[in-house]
Image (tube, rainbow, N blue to C red; front, top):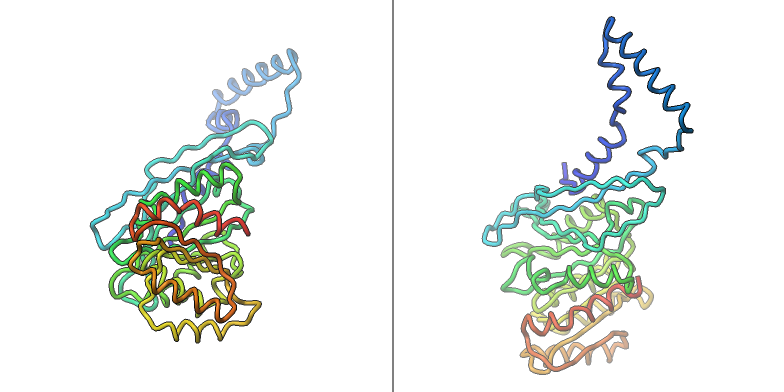
Length: 328
């Protein structure tokens, strides 16, 4: 059975909705003469209270409960295997008003593994759930898949600050909430098939996503950018948005041309390309841009100062997220 990170939320909701009142527990625990005596005392107390003041209307617990869940997984950066996260902090707050508004401004980031149908090794990934994901149970969200560089793992985007920036943009109302999935492309893992065959279906099954291509994006930096270009162009029925951040395309530009020509105009994904002026991959990226111009493929480009480094990506990360999320 796949791991459900909101088990803690479900358990709290069940407890709150099925908790017996103290008065019911008092009566059901009494027996014999003790029961009669306690029942008389209880009736007199109730009658006295009713005579002093009218009983105010109390909304049912089911209609007014708001449960905030904060889950912080234990991460092992050096291990090849990452265990499913265990909630180490769960806080429940019950409101007495009729509003379901959520004031939480911080999303939840989990580290998870799932079995793969195409590989003997599991697929590890991190997932960012936006603020109020647990509370807004009727809302479905766009999904952004972000691939890391060749010498990194699924922690790279978090280290660059992607979750902090997403929190700020969402809580300030600049963009609508969205989910971020950050797969770990381990050595020997076919990331294209892992995403298409296993990870995307898993995410759509377990989490409340919007599954049409318009609402699903794939992006990456360095090698991850090259993978995002290949996967996005070969699967426009899955991804309607492609983001290339200092992309490393380890294949001939002819393949890119063939993939593009297979896509109809109405199914062409939105495309973003950025690279610094001191980046060693700049010439290859400019060649890709020239091809898009030749094939009349629309795209957005950013060619600022900068090199192939975390400082460059971190400095432009807010631009990336705004571009991905504003059309949503």
